[in-house]
View (cartoon, rainbow over the protein chains, first blue to last red):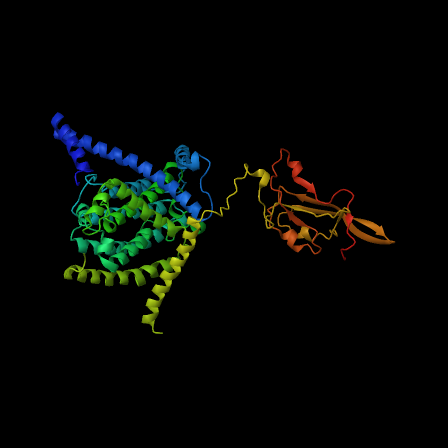
Length: 361
Length: 159
């Protein structure tokens, strides 16, 4: 059963064929180009699909219809918007720091590109399988805030600077909670390698195997990662109503599109990470020793499982974005330092005890 | 209650109120009956309008072609962007000289629909209409005279 949907057979065959027909240097170059192109294409498709999904879901939550005119049910709306953004003029304000102003969107988008490389999409469909996968994703995704800070600073605009500084304060505090909540599963599975974590969930997802403490860390991860990717109700860095879009006020055209796409891709990465770590990644839903049930679940391809779980987490993130009002900066920091962090620390202690005594399934 | 128990009470109350909010939006998401969006150009014939909608300022006249405007000019003073001009004239009624409305001129092109004129009118002579398709090819057509030709002030209005 396990070989049924194994992508590593396909990839190793391509690798063998390339290596047999040319020198190893060119084989590696061609492989990297192929992977890069795949990610670029996936990036555009996922980004556009997420923007559309957000607008439709937001509309449904608010008793509206959402985009409805371009194509059936408005499915071509975001493509039309993207083409419009491509044709728009790139305006650089007079007193902006030109170099940093142009650099900032690239930092934001490149960090989200780097983070997506370590996400396991299916068995064998995994660009780089680090043994420190979680640490790598955390490190790279928190670098995105440098781009946000640079954008706010170089725009030479008070609103942008306020937005950027808020974003800095937010990331510094919420990064802790994200790390600690992921640590709970690292303790239980005994590995930071994402493929090992996925395989450790073959007989059940950590969300269910780890009792209530892992559920608590899942909820904390959702809250903290929402704050980390600057989405509502923690979107103080953008705050349309008070800061007029904050750090990307001065950006237009394709540079604005970069920020916009990076925001949605970060949401995808965070959801994919939550799905991988807590919900079993591409692993089908297996319940203990129910052999028949597990066999039926195995027939669904892993990529479907992965996309399904990721969409579920994305839906939850969108759900609370469109339910709760934006927090004030002091409320935001109180939530992190007074509530999430202490709960998380106690939670880690309990999980360490569970792991030591072998109380998990 | 000690600060320690208050801390845990805060956490549980916070989670409870968050779940209540998500329940409300979740209900709207799953019950797609009441959609407030109106697909305007298509449903133009059976467009549903609401009382509170501020389309344009108009002056209600009764069936005897009478309005309630005394020509006092309070609306003109209150209008923040000068879209109202009240032109009054003097008439001799029962041997007494009396100020009556000649023309109530309303510049729709300058109106921001703030509603100060309707709110401050002492005799309720002005009201908001439901018409909203104001696009015309000539700017002059946006300047309207609100009192109809030959209309007089209603007897009911006390001065």
